[in-house]
Length: 370
Image (tube, rainbow, N blue to C red):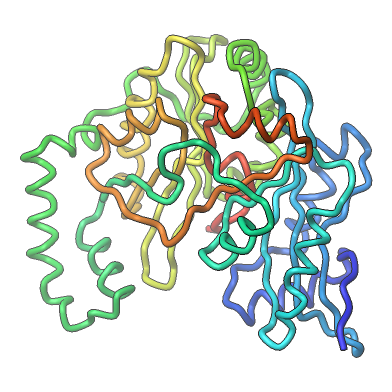
């Protein structure tokens, strides 16, 4: 016999044990508490907020969990309370309660927008059957990427596909990949340098000013990107070197910024950096190429094997596709949403303002501790 209840911080050890049973990456207790105790949404509005829900047996063993990440959004400057589902995991013997666990997520009061932005294939199908929709963007089931160390990349790829016998081909295949990139010119950003782009140690007052510029220029749905929200997401990763912040501008005039996040695949020995966020003021879309060039140069110098981009809306996606040498298909569409109000649902179905990326949900939680 098992029941569902609201999770508490005292459940930390058991939830981590559950995640470990299913080979999911773990959090430190301090990081888990930080997500909820320092959330700008919760601290500003003093909202009661479930940190998630658990399935618990009669002998008090936790056999299922669904996290509930709080996020601040705006739609045409109207504040929205958003909840992102995360770390949905249930032991096989108790999966008859999986839908009831998700029901707790959708049944919570006071939430305007529900998200699932790290949905694996099975989870995505379940959430879509329960009313979640895909935003009107081209491809949140595909990534674009650059290879900075061709041999290490191929070695990891062959290991993932369990083609150990083919590893003797790693060196010649790496040479062919590199030659093809040079012939097509798709390696030009790797050696271009970053132009007027600088790496920052953190987020200063310029980012609050830039957020005001962004929200005045951008209509539609926008995840809040003020200094407090940026710090909340990336402060720990910046401290241990797992995140980079890049800024384009002169002095206090910030025209664009990006955050890159280390998201390795340690099971195959692959060191990977991902573009977690990129935003620019009107008229400065060309800063994306310079930011990518600066990032790729640093990846090469620090021994990162691969740089990858997931998501973004049509304008940015088109730029990235024109520059990136490679793309890969993901197993599932990873970004889903559901609005509580029918009017907002209808608006979001056709809104051209969607620009979803790793920043906008819970994807930034998957950080590497270096």
